[in-house]
Amino acid sequence: MHKNIAVLAGDGIGPEVIAEAIKVLQAIEKKYNHSFSFEQALMGAAAIDATGNPLPEETIKTCTSNDAILFGAIGDPKYDNNPDAKVRPEQGLLALRKALNLYCNVRPVAAYDALIDKAPLKRERIEGADLVIYRELTGGIYFGEKRESENGDVASDLCKYSKEEIIRVAHLAFKAATKRNNKLTLVDKANVLASSRLWRSTVTELHQKHYSTVDLDYLFVDNAAMQLILNPSQFDVILTGNLFGDIISDEASVIGGSIGLLASASVGDKYALFEPIHGSFPQGAGKGIANPIATILSAAMMLEHFDMHVEAKAIQSAVNNTINNSIGTPDISPEKSYTTTEVGSHISKLILQ
Image 1: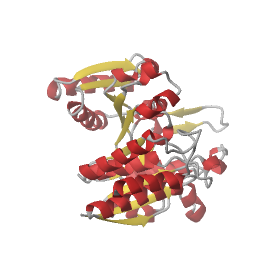
Image 2: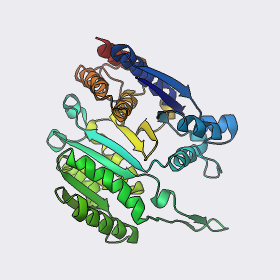
Image 3: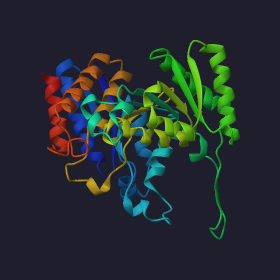
Image 4: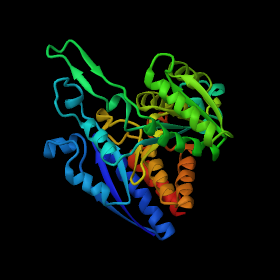
């Protein structure tokens, strides 16, 4: 099978971790007789530096003309630390999600047995944790109307959701629950926010009409954030809005032991983008210390999107083997660390065995 993949390496450590994901995909090519073509395009600070635009029109064309998108990371201190910057790298990613209608972000989170004792949480809290977060991605406060007073003393961001926006992501989350442990938890702030009350009523209605066999639970976001640390194994599928999902999915990274292990998919009805959830880690760029596993697992999610399930499992198995043998970058293997390239090469070799 042949697939065309748009590659947006992005900023900071993005090019380094993307290179290792491509290396692993090339191992899949050889092992399973597939062929992948990779078309590079600019986004983020790299695109601003080259064109003045964090998402050039040419990049959008590249993304829409390929079968899927593999993305690295976005962000640069020269923009992040400048509150007066009119153009920011992150605007490119938000604009791409909107342009391709990537309305659902999927983030699996699991505890690795070999890393449990290295994780910041106690073994008894995280052992057996295995959940997935479904985050609405193109609505809410990130995309709502933004206002700033002329003197700069007052600012506001509108959190706006429609019933249709909620239904389409809720369908995906409920379907995922039916293939897992039949439990879905809606995370909102319905005791305070009108938008959250719309979420709750819409999801409840959808549950009653189409997914009554799924156990539906509700948690306010503050309680959910606490429960995610106290007892993460109680969760199966978490469904939530854009802002809450952004926060709790990063919080969930402590369950796996490192944010460098968490992959994600951003999907719509036509296009799909796959990326690690970590940032651009500019202070680590070029030092060979960036963990490529999240990006490699994102590539595995892309293969699942292509219905290459055996191939995706081969990557996941190679990653598990690598972690179990303490072959990792400093974030997960501080005693004896391996470089970004060494970790990617080890995973590739395991696939080819």
